[in-house]
Length: 480
Image 1 (spheres, one colour):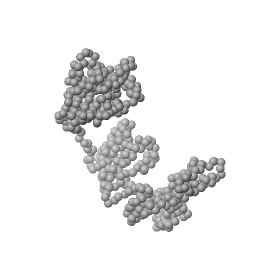
Image 2: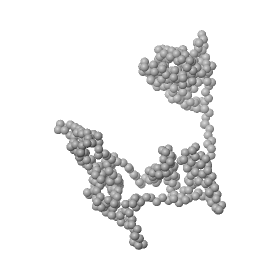
Image 3: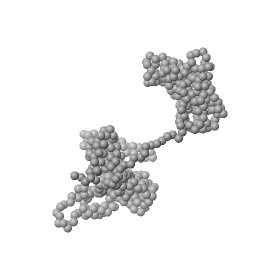
Image 4: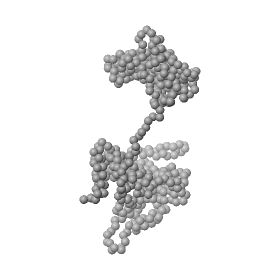
């Protein structure tokens, strides 16, 4: 049987694993692993000399796990390990004493550093020896530049055509000159120390020749002795001593012998005795000020769903024209907007028979707005600071207010207009009475809009209602 303390540890781990198993399939694997790590006290095991770096490395692992799961790599363990090996942490903490720049040779031109490291010199150029079309810029006698072109030789040909051979030979020569130029630029960037690095397999070191076109080929005539000396020292370091009279041979071409791998500390660490997870207090938040409650919703609820849907479509059409200005609307733009009306009504759940009737009324209303002087003035793009469906928020009388302004602009006299569209229709005889009632109903709401704009500028303000079905612009108030 386990000692009491070990039994308590095991029980806690098993309970945690059972909880994670219950959530498997409903939560991502990365979330389950991170949750288990926190519950087991992973962040509390700060045995590293730099706890922040330890937490950063743990988060890097969890990020790699989440990305591997998203890319479908968790079905094969080897795929995940390969993905994990390609992931990197942020490394140690930043210090002003160490500065590292990683950039290409081309980008290094004109810059200098105390130490320059040029790795992977043995790499083969990333280029294909076969192309469908070969071409080569060549200078002409008249100081112009021409292009020599040759197609790929037929598969039945025993050898490449003379023109292809000429182009390929000239390209290799130019690439060699470019490699020499690049190496000159890169190696002369170092003010104190220059490191040149290449990987050479021990099995080929005796008769080694750099890959044609590689950067190592450009420095090999001068530095081959230095590289060969380094290879000899590396091979000597892998020869076992004779103190134990061992006859075991060491394969120098064994990847395990030639590849240096960091030693990873996999010691087990437990949180302090009596540790338990601590959870932050629940968020206790309340707004600093009571949001402003809108006045009664009076957008013709008495008229039913059809009126509200008609109003939504009218707002959409007027917004589409106002955004670009009525002067910039072409006939095909108007036709496209009219064609959208049945679709918009259908998307809002209007029955087909009803949608046909409403679409006819809306086309008529929209056409009247576009032809009327009032509608043209409201939707003109010549106004200063013209906006449609303008979202605005601010403090009004100690309360925060969010508003959407249907239409606003500054006219030629420098006056700010705030216009609210109202799509209602009065079929009775007392139109003036109906307009007065609407003005009274929306006066307070438009006054709040005016207060919001007063915080943005000093222009005089006029608030108004625009009723497109009556083509009436009803002025509500004028503010100095």
